[in-house]
Image (cartoon, rainbow, N blue to C red; front, side, top):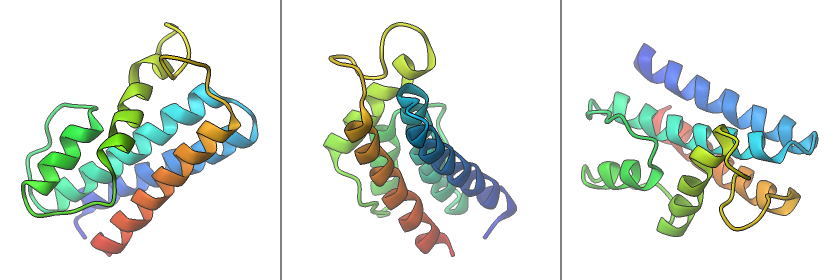
Length: 128
């Protein structure tokens, strides 16, 4: 594995672990922000390793399609991508909650952490 890939994956793992700590602390907006960042960085780790161009985007669906266009499949549905995309801006800036229609709660965050955990683990398997 390339050094740069290892760095991206390491950051993805740190964001995942942070999301778990934040969930346990009932800090739901930052939990979701770390989930989104974990998935984004894990997908970008694949792009780096496979020598594909990393676009300046936080759009999970766009990253998924970029990987798929190079015949790299990740187990991430379009609905999950859309959900993760709704998290990015609202969780970073005080324009409401991390979700557009309601405040995040433990169940939503737990589901989001499970998505990130699945993606990070699958990326580790793919790259190691």
